[in-house]
Structures are given as C-alpha cells and as structure tokens.
Amino acid sequence: MFPAAMKTDASDLLPVAQLDVLAQEGFYGIAGPTEAGGLDLDQSTTSQVVESFASGCLTTAFVWLQHRNPVRAVAASDTPGLRDEWLAALCRGDRRAGIALAGNRPGSPILRASRTASDDVILHGEAPWVSGWGRVDVILVAARDGDDVISVLVDATEDPTLSARRLSLVGANASGTVTLRFRDHRVPADRVVGEEPHADVLVRDAAGLRLNGSLALGVVDRCCRLMGPSVFDERLVAVRGSLDDATAETSPAARAAASELAMRAAAALTVAHGSRSILLDQHPQRLAREALFLLVFGSRPPIRAELSRRIAGA
Ligand SMILES: Cc1cc2nc3c(=O)[nH]c(=O)nc-3n(C[C@H](O)[C@H](O)[C@H](O)COP(=O)(O)OP(=O)(O)OC[C@H]3O[C@@H](n4cnc5c(N)ncnc54)[C@H](O)[C@@H]3O)c2cc1C
Image (tube, rainbow, N blue to C red; front, top):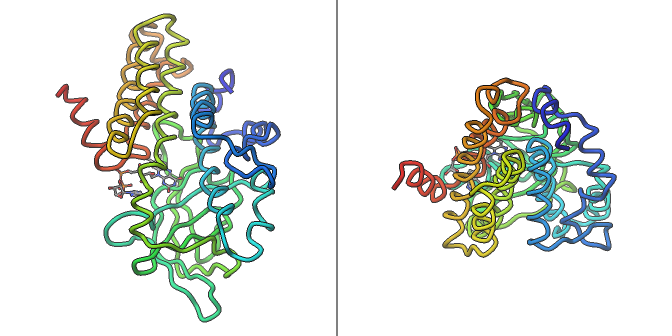
C-alpha cells in the first residue's frame, strides 16, 4: 500500500485494486467467524493489522476498516436467512460494506426508523458522514425508533428516496465520504440486522472506538520510518501500550494521546524534511493532513475534552 499512498491520496476515489488485494488475502474476514470463512482475529492482532495498514495508506485502511462492524453485526444477527445470505460473502470481500451509525448518536435523533405492518423498515433523515461510497455494496445503517436502534443493510446506490452528497476532505479525501439523505426509504424485513435499546448501544460505544486509535498509530509509525530513529519510536510504543491496556475510564485519554502523537510526529517529520515537505507529492504534508483528520474522526466528547486540554499544553 505504501508505494501507492501518494497516488491514492491524490485520486478522487481510492482505486478498487487496493481493496481487491485485501479481499484476496482474506482481510475482509478478520472479524468473521471461521465457519463462515473468517479469521476471527483477537483484538490485539486486529489492532496490529489496522496499524500496519494505516502506516501503508490511511485512506485504504480507513475504508476497509468500516467493513468490520457490518461483519460482526451480521454474524450476531437473529434474522432468518441473513447470515446465510451475507456472512460468507462479506468475509470473502465479494460484498463490501460501510457504516452509517447516525442513529446511535445521543440526543434527539437525526435519522429515524419505523416499521410497516409487514415489518419492513422506513428510514427518514440524515447520516452526515458515510465513508466508502462508490467502493461498497451495502451500508449498515443504524436509525432510531423511539428508545431503540434498528440496524439494516441498505444497498449503496442512489434512488429517489436515497441521495448521497460527496464531501471534500483535507485528508483521506479518496475515502468517498458522503452525506446520505433518506426520504421514507423502504428496507425489506429480511435486511433488518437487529434491534436493541439505544442505552445499550451507548454503553458499548467506547469499546468499539479502540481501533480508531490504531489508525493514528499507523500515521505515527510511517512518520517514524521516514524520520529514522527519534524520540517518537519510544512514544509510539508507550501510547500503543496505553491503548491496549485502556479501560472504559482511560480509553478517551489513550485515544487523545494517539491523535496528539500523530499530529506531533507529522509536524516533526515536516520540520525534519524541510521545505520540500510541503510539496504536494511529498509524504510529510500528506501525513500532516491525515493527522488533522484523525483529530476529529471517531471522536467523542471526553476524547475531544482531553485532546483540547493536551493541545493547550495543560
Ligand atoms: C471524515 C469523516 C468520515 C466519517 N465516516 C463515518 C462513517 O463512515 N460512518 C459513520 O457512522 N460515521 C462516520 N464519521 C463520523 C464519526 O464517527 C463521528 O461522528 C465523528 O467523528 C464525531 O464528530 P463530532 O465530534 O464532530 O460529532 P458529530 O459527528 O457532530 O456528532 C454529534 C455528537 O454525537 C456523538 N456521536 C456521533 N456518532 C456517534 C455514534 N456512532 N455513537 C455515539 N455517539 C456518536 C458525537 O460524539 C457528538 O457528541 C466520519 C467522520 C469524519 C470526520
């Protein structure tokens, strides 16, 4: 991935060949059960894989990583026929998925779901951030129905009730990130993945954010490799350790530390390489833009508070 990272970064949408290689090598199935052709990797190995891929090419790693959540959700689904229809194909990467978790947000819902008499689901509202558009076949959409969250698999194609507006990003722009708008979009009952109380979703949220920290560590790792031996080598090991050992209480601080380290490492690389760092065909400016993106992606209020405190030098 790394030799192609500059070209991928500059493209409008990452080349599908990057993702095809990951599928061929089995990486679309890392979260899937072995009986469905998955690798069922443990958390520690998964973190290392995510970090390695992000070091090679953040954009590719980012789009590929979205697939993990749908694989796990389908594997755990009770909906008759859903696992048989989708799980093995998702694990092979024959079908690729993104996520639109707008319905998981706290507060008043921006994306709502309701059931019809035949148990189909009607989606209405907005998912402000959805990555991988143009490179995924389906989106796992989470939408609020009262105090519950309903998850469904939605075909990743525009139609009169589903529109996508492309967003321009300073980093990882080739991730094909869009805002989706649903206007009474109907999803058949056999595409319902699950339903659970919103309160339970929020309790699980922090644990699900661990891997985003490995995206930041990947950027740090690449900066270290390009810089040669520096203090950042030790800092990378320390922050990785904090993320691996994090509890629900310490996780926001560990995530903030990873994002801060990516910013500092990219700044150090930029300084070390001098003026040529800011040429658009040079890695330091790409890594600095990616570090900027990782200051906000996958954030939550406690992560933001800790990061603000650190950046202010407190
Ligand atoms: C470039 C980019 C690409 C993204 N791609 C995706 C994507 O493919 N799919 C996707 O679902 N999200 C995606 N996100 C959204 C991201 O996961 C978080 O919503 C976002 O990083 C939080 O940003 P924010 O602090 O500005 O809050 P906002 O996005 O404005 O959210 C408002 C509030 O809701 C909370 N919140 C947002 N999402 C959740 C959630 N899922 N669970 C619990 N609380 C939540 C936030 O912490 C915040 O307090 C993307 C974000 C960016 C910047």
